[in-house]
Length: 266
Image 1: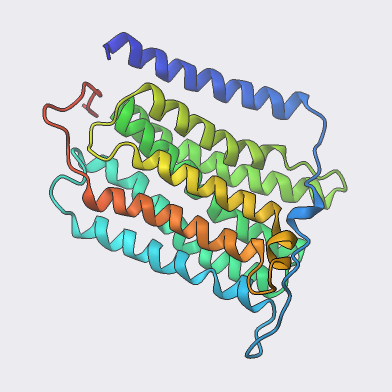
Image 2 (image 1 turned 30 degrees about the vertical axis):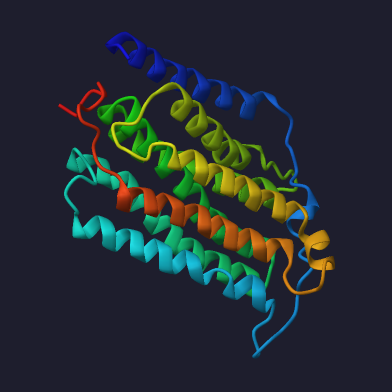
């Protein structure tokens, strides 16, 4: 890939961000389908309400903390440039926080608690997008995009909550942050090679997460198969598996030799 083509990639990302902003401004408010908040499995076990939807968050805490440990340990070859690690620090920290926010919400699934579930989710997606930009397009662009992307993620959740409080719920900004990030990650991974081995692992993680979202939509249908596990609980487990696959990628990868032409930070 040439210098110019990578510049084009950055411009395409900027145009995609502009298009997303225009959609938020021009598209009428879009309320969230109730199916995402009507959870079928409300069993109480050991005094814990919605037991399985609560305890299935534990893998997020374990994997998030494990990821932070792996980065702190600093295995040679994990990152060609030390600045790249911050996107993964933010990503795995967000994953650990998902366990706390999601547990808080599922103990009493009310709208005023849902914000604390969604905040770390938005941060995780934005951090992963910054990491993919750094690894495949430009280290400088990825590093510089990290904070603005995190701010955009937080803003999307706060706006969603604010819109709900004023009686005109609009889930669109949060949906753009989550699904737009997924589309951008897949597009970048398809168009630009990684500087590391195991570059396809990010696509595997996305595919696993897609299965998680499918399980979420089929919450009641999955539970009806035998009353053992609901689709929402399965979503938690599959989403955690997707993050573990990313952690596995970081653990096993090494820089390509010779490295690709992704521009360094300096």
